[in-house]
Image 1 (cartoon, chains in turn blue, red):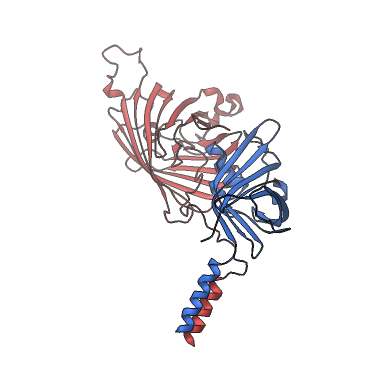
Image 2: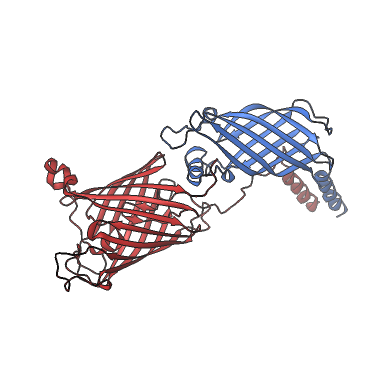
Length: 179
Length: 289
């Protein structure tokens, strides 16, 4: 019995220890910049984890929460392009190339990892800016480009909005230390 | 010892190899998008809701019968029954609209209310909506003497229906619509075949998705309390440029619910006619970015 208590204590300590930071309502914006039409989509439900002990950077977004401002376009985006019923999430899991020092000054970071959307996984390197806020939380901003072709997302030819073949994605998240 | 093993097993389970975040949907009960392409499907209304502050515009045509051949360009020369309708989303659940069909110059006020929306996880297996309409024949009937012309109350006709729809798979959707229509006075001068006041029917709408943006569509409306022939339609829906185009062959020229039930039908093959609808949804006051 004692051993059991010890084990649970150990288990508990595992989740407390370490330098883990989590975000629950990060912001994601994508910009589709085609010659004749430009629009953005946005979600504020980005979930993220930065674990410096394990050097793990893990983010995901429920793609159903992306809104472009036109409901029919959202429906088409979900049904025809992202196919969110089959592939509901965009995911990124990777590592810092060099561990950040976490200062109050903005620090450039590079994360290499796997980005997965529409059921296709690709290795990418994302550059971002990280800084530690006075309250101990981390502030992360990053952006990169997603070529729809790389992820087998078809570009429609006959719709009332033009879709850019390359989408500029930016994220902004405040990650709080895990308690 | 046994407990220790159980505890160890727990430990193993609670520590996934990489300690990634668990992928969880924000909303587990997401509604199914686009059971049908538009709020209209051939001639029937569907459960497809309108967003608040959006407007659905539909213009619908049915032409003369195909049997005139090339001489009458398969019915296109015979004059079309045209209905246009504007429907406004007042909330996510309620929309109100008005329509006018050229047949008997019929004005119709109608509304739809959505009770349930089918969810992707099947917690709600069906979408359920109700619709009702109230319309009036506005033809002045100048060829009749002033006393023979129908009074306003004689010109009224009502409709009501329940719509039960399910997307069985991403490709196949079906809607069952028990319907009724009531003519206050089914006068002979009206372009209907029935002579009763009340008509009951079972509307059926089917959609089979053929490609990302087009579907084969079916409509069958057996009459339940009259000897009138049943309505049958088969067509093709295409989403293009923000419009939904619906082309079809159908046995009746009627375009509104009241006339669909009382208007009578030809025989498929003999009195088939070409019809087509154009649907467009306009966002009003929504943020455009």
